[in-house]
Image (cartoon, one colour):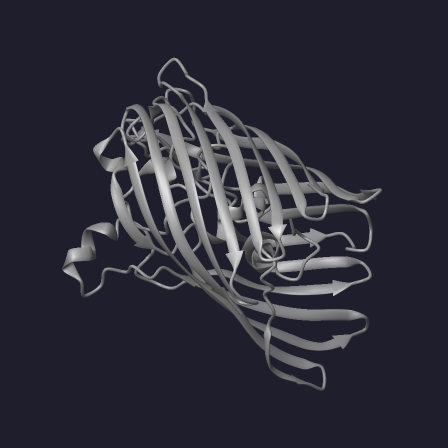
Length: 404
């Protein structure tokens, strides 16, 4: 899917989920100045059944991605440079404000507020692109944009059914890590070249662990250098098959590692780093995507958060892979199957786990804007890091998506 050679990475991902095309609604276009809007509204009904009490629920939520409204501004070209800016706002429908019966499902998420996940300016010319601001980042970013659940259903993160937020997190706990939206400076090489490169300096994050499996909650919060991410990708055609192969990486340090105010026994400094690679194949009506990652100090779901460090503050090793095949069986109907695994290794101080996730889905375009879909899935942990037991959780989801 997408990534750096599209106008807006996250918006473009929707085009690849179905034949439903997302086109900007032009509001103004005169003398080189333009203004347009775009977005989507998504709502799911999801029933889950699992081994732990916290796995069982019926929820009506916004799915893997919150609802989105985007605003795009274009300025007149200057000396061969095209300048555009974007603001993309996300919000979940289940805020719980004013409804005490729903308050327990709000959890610790930002579902009660508007989330400006995208706010950036882009300068584009023969030299490539410079992007300044907040946008989806590079490392391990392609899998979630390839995931048909990114604008549909997906799993709850770690199968926590009632922790608020959107329905879940695609397959990020079982196959890939979530890249998130980060502020920084990024360069993308010219889109016309089959070999493309991107490099970015991002606002660094603290490196921590907060899951029950890491009882001492270590945290390294002092950052003195930016996070560095980069990607190299090559796209081409072999007969009727279009393909893209890529590799990307991330590196960041953080200091001041403490546990309950005391310096971590494993040291003051921690390092997060990772590499991932993947391949997409496009046969027309059939598409295939495969990716794999290996990381240190990045955890098993949200990068740098949740379970990146063990009980002593030592970086934890994790790895995983994820594959998806889709087939367009009619011009309006897409079938999908995906499978992924993530392993976070044991350390002397903290037990790890293995997670597996399987999703089957059908996505049908009612018209050029509306899609209805259904998904069934199973998420498995040999030791769920939230519930501290083996869990198997089954998902049944039905939903609708409207894009503009």
